[in-house]
Image: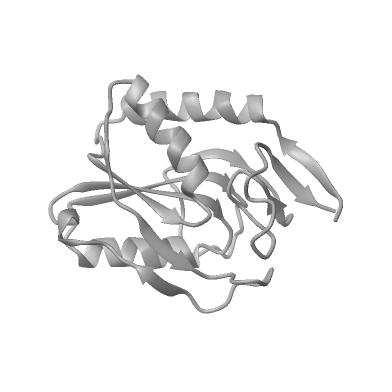
Length: 170
């Protein structure tokens, strides 16, 4: 497979730091982070540590949703692990790798709201800015086109998640 780097490791680190500053100075601070596994875990780790450096230390609870499986086309979203009773009354920051059509984010927000969260905000590493997306993010590290991307937690049938940069498959 051939790929081309869209966002370098250094560019990602700079954007994560800037995003953490923006979140830390927002009028409504989250008090718990809820990364969406598996695609959001690397971005989430970087973001919650950057937030801690800004004085915003969040509790963390994982949400595990699956929409791609081993294909490049999203299928039905299945929940492997959902929100617990710890969410009730909390200000939740959902963290995911990529916002494509937004179905995973929409499902995550619905589950968290149903669990009684006081508020839900969304941060993504990459927003494809699709006009037909069914969800949107409050905080975005990078915007991109409709390229299929890998790295920084995003994969191609389970491969290439650990790349320290974001690439488009060509």
